[in-house]
Image (cartoon, rainbow, N blue to C red; front, side):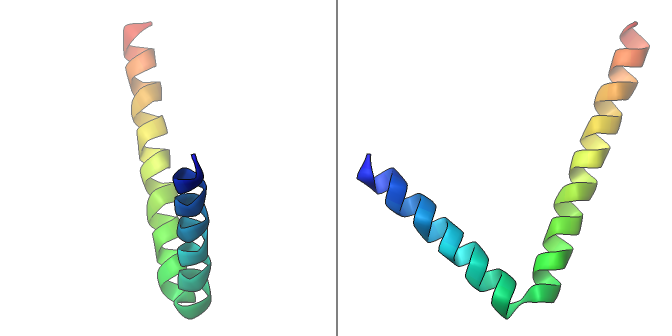
Length: 52
């Protein structure tokens, strides 16, 4: 169980370091993820409308 906690903290530290050192890259990453989620949601809605 402690290994999972350490990996979580290491991932959080890496993300914080990336955001501080590369704010433009972090912004682009967030925009890419948000765009992908919006596309996925649109696809699900299209599927539901086609089924119903």
